Image 1 (cartoon, rainbow, N blue to C red):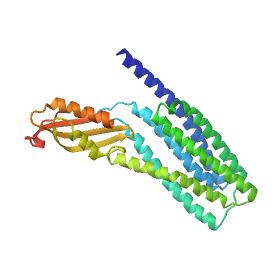
Image 2 (tube, one colour):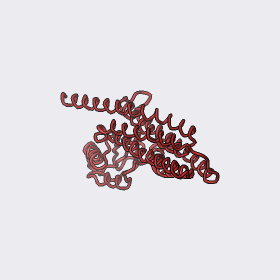
Image 3 (tube, helix red, strand yellow):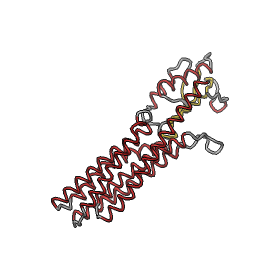
Image 4 (cartoon, rainbow, N blue to C red):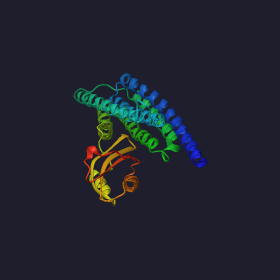
Amino acid sequence: MHDHAAGGHAHDHTAGANAKMLGWALALTTAYLVAEVVGAFVFNSLALLSDAAHMLTDVAALVIALMAIRFGQKPADDKRTFGYKRFEILAAAFNALLLFAVAIYVLVEAIQRFRQPEAVQSTGMMIVAAIGLVVNLVSMKLLTSGKDASMNVKGAYLEVWADMIGSIGVIAGAVAIRFTGWTWVDPIVAVGIGLWVLPRTWVLLRDTTNVLLEGVPGGIKLPELRARIAGVPGVASVHDLHVWSMSSDDVTCTVHVTLQEGADADAVRRAVTDTLDRRFGIEHCTIQTEAATEPCEDTPHRHS
């Protein structure tokens, strides 16, 4: 009991430290996001606006990481029996939709600028992008300590790392415009950053939609899972199998198992639970066992 309490205290301490670092990184990134959007319009730079959209993914990633820590620790109650972890998924889905909208705007605006080039203030554009590069480096430094211990923090770290490439792209574009006067470099950089962000945005939208539709979590093949359960000694057949997740790292399973004649229900249930945990990492499972001669709807429920 003492060891468990000590482990829980260490976990809370780590989560608290991660939340503090994420909070600082979020404050920095949000302040710069506002500055970059203002700079994009003041200096007429589409590349800055496109990079701001990418910076928005950083802000969203940091917010989602913080929400996962805050809401992940909040227990389930009589109103939210699964807890509050799905806020993380809703925030991620909203972020993906917003990014698609910004990407479409940048693409349409870039086509217009290719047809009719507009003047860009390259010096201001370069200064804003350079500040962004510094913000990214500071944020990466803040998140370095927690990224190896937490997949959640690592995701935010990788988002900030990826945005650093966007800042470097804007700086390179600003330098090119400054010394050559080629204003068409600005929309090219803008489209390039958009193409860099969109594939990851699509993956984010696809994954969050799958969670919201109660789809089978990525990495789990339902036919294999069904076969593993059917292969447990004492199991005659498997039906009404459902696997879903409430958040990015939370998997739940329910299943009805028909027993072979003479099989012990409790032993089979424990064996199925163990198989699901060891092979698929599913810790939350509800297993209903029933005799082969009993119709499913009349069978009393025996939950694990």
